[in-house]
Image (cartoon, rainbow, N blue to C red; front, side, top):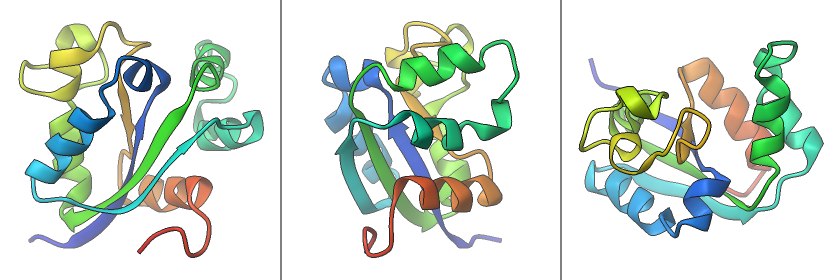
Length: 140
């Protein structure tokens, strides 16, 4: 059964630096998803640590935080039928080496670390992450 959902997508510093923001947005809009929030930010450490809180203490945590702090990030809220599943399919799997051609990561990602985009994993994560990146009144 389909349901209307909202989810968070981040274009990470590698995607912003490589000029892929427009292509990433195009791919999601082509799937029928609607932008309901969009901003470019230079995130502060506290925001990134809150975003990645579930990974705190893991061996890759510090590198993950440092990478998201390394440049501008484009945060977008997307809305649509089964948006979370649609976004995850459009992005491709996390590891660029395993991502299928035709997905964002399969076509553009360079490594597991520099994989262009982040997307919420499930409805609970989407709700939490949207609240981290967007304040009251920043989504329409």
